[in-house]
Length: 578
Image 1: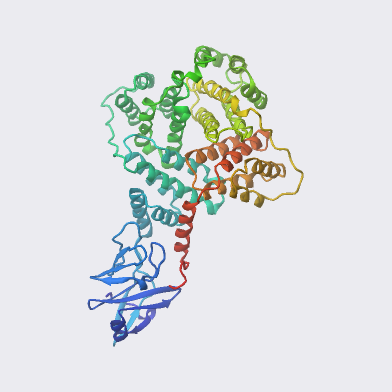
Image 2: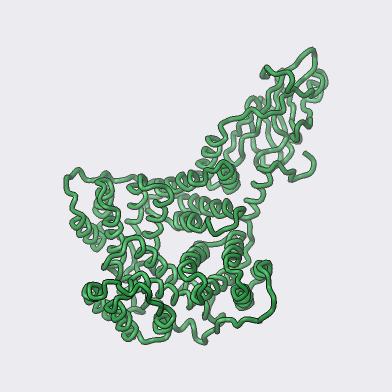
């Protein structure tokens, strides 16, 4: 029992005799329901709602100083409200005292440091993969303007607790951080929640990571570190590669040099791990953009295991037969330095994206590569070529026919997200070595040509008036791929472009979306931003919509969890008898 120093704040709860006799009593004060408990000669006051799922604690049991909720059996220390079960939260406690046989309560909860509280709950949620706890912590920290703290805590947890390195969870976290500005305000904490949930899942049952120390050396030559890193990745020497990269970061070598090291190793072989390796490397840099370069030494080396262990596509039959794409690309790579030097990126106003994309989609590989190389010599900027390959890859989803096997959606997805990663990396740190990825991506798009046979046409405009609220219901029925594309085409034709981006984000976030859905939405947003207001941008959004619709609806359990957390945070009654 805690003595109150401000009598004017007190609310009478009843007589001491009554509460001793009944053991519990619920009162209402200042919009709260407060549970008064008498146990072992002492009085306690707690919020009547179980912080886990809102069940009335009045219907729980008290024994030995512990209050147990009867719904999920969460246990709470009566004296302070702290939970003994991490899946629940702490229940707010109130000051209480007796005066002349009457019991009084201060209806203002005993406040802890809310930021520190939610940061602790975030860590506990990540450690235990506790989705409801994560939702509550994200909502609480978002309300305090601390979303970047959520990203940083989750990111560092993800790299420290997974010895095998970078995870799909970290990619999802980064992708959602990238798209926060284009989402509706109420959807932003939902996006962050998805990211942290997947980080927690990616570390489940994984051994922790133990960082190697950087070299104790005076060597600061970026070219030497580039040479070492590529060699060690080539020979799959994971520890040597990690220590080389960590040393380069620790010695504060130029950031462009560190990016070149990583992206060069990602393009020394073709389309590593169906494009995931380069995408992971790009996402690692983007994550560091969000949480600060001071964490680069911890985050960037997490990419090394996926680099040294990646499958190299020149070792696969599809890249060798019936057309030896590896040999064609090797020849192009050998000419690339001279072509870049000759062109010097002087055609900054080049607008041939759609024409070149048609060549990539339908042309023969040798002719496509020859044309792309000629454009480099003519001075077309490399980042415009990388954007063109990404656009062509997005078109595969636009023209994907539903007669294909469902799993083939992943095939077109891999090329698109790889091409987007090349494009983003090229804008971050352009290099001749990274430019190889532009041509590799084009050949991956070529390999998917059979998925556009028969070629699904881009939907024609209906001419009917339409509003953005027509789009989301299309995701409620399976198999609405072409119907959704028609709605998107009409909305884009009517000028609702920003709204389409927002609604596609809503459609993604309300589902139990998987890794690829998060990837394709984020890549689509990034590429749309490059082509905004042009037909190419509309095509990209149409492809994204078709992909997302193909994977909807799901059970939507994750959004239900977030909604429960949000209602509890707002103080709403979930059960009606609190």
